[in-house]
Length: 209
Image 1 (cartoon, rainbow, N blue to C red):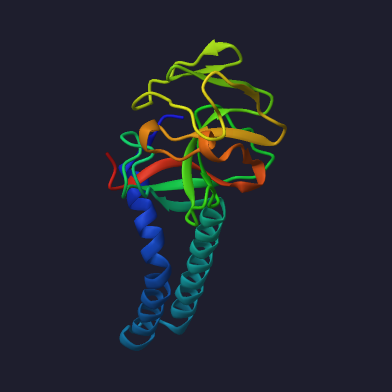
Image 2: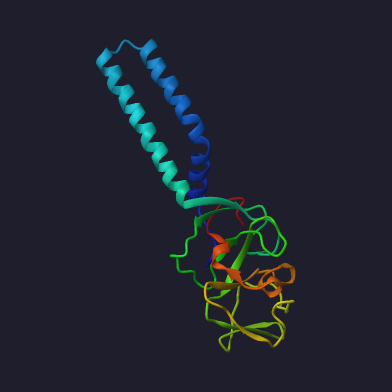
């Protein structure tokens, strides 16, 4: 999946992070000033107070819905360079087994391969695919895979040897980093269980390339 960059989304995310703190404070200040400093009728003040409360409820509901479906994620390290720069901030959709992953999706995994922090890797093989590495290239179901996003050759690891073809089991995926020389991935520690996938990267919103 190609990386998306959107300045509007970035501004929106920053606002959604800041406003939950400021909104109730500013709303309360505004309501108190209205009651103490204006000569409006009591009826008007009650109506405006009610409208302010309703708008706060709508705002908090929208914020809750947004964060129930999206999570911020910071790229750490160079295993996905140069496509995903270390220090860049992304939105990520929450993953569930009902979502159909595609080859090329960049996903976030629970700590694997002895790493405690979440990892971001690209989906290369889906359940049922046959994958093989040969002389620095990736072969998927017998066909050489074109990977324009890759930096460097794809060398084998402890799990997948050169010239060895393996079939990806059900509910498992084969993932690799784009920067193949500096990525610890399925070549080393094997298939990724569906249960280890937490999110799918979508939009870069801060410190983008």
